[in-house]
Image (cartoon, rainbow, N blue to C red; front, side, top):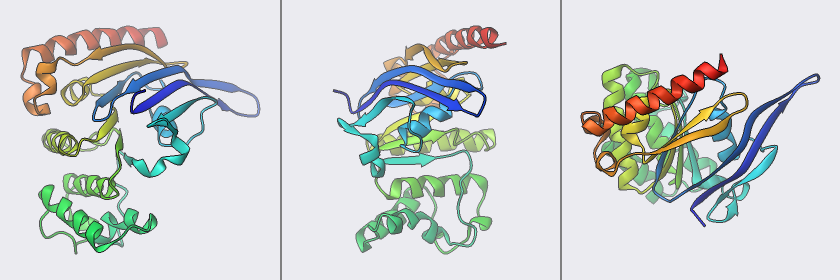
Length: 258
């Protein structure tokens, strides 16, 4: 049994007059420490799938298990990082990053110190007493990552966390997130529309088709790329080869939905 088991997930959204199938027959096994990416056209259910994995949404059918235990009993093992940082503007950076510790009632002196140490690891020196409005977009996303890691989740769900950033900041943050997750042996699932980002950061890439969302194809990222930081991986010949392959498959999927 793998660390994270996604078993036969189906999800339907109901309204008074209609039923819309968002996901159908999603099954995959993910090992601890793996980095997985999901790509697909808009409306293929990528974010719905993350919400189900996070335990925020109950699937119509199927189950999610972490270490053979249902996700509803494992929510503290999951961290969620979104496109926007959602920092509370009236709280200091220190108060923001330790909020999860307080909610989970684990805000010990040791855990508090670990959170502040994470700020330093993210090259965020002397910002703990500042407010979010005093930081740049890239710095705020790094704070959001620290907040997510502070509760020591085993799984990180990343829903387009770099899409609102300028390209240079995005590339730097990709490297930082990649190296941090490797260092702490975190399992990560990334939703993105960026093929290059998916290849550069992942061990495996899954393509989803839309209406309903199903896994259409999967790709194993070559080991030569997995061992490189995202920035360096983008310069490897095998990166371009895989990019072209996935690009063609995505185009085929999108043409079938239009």
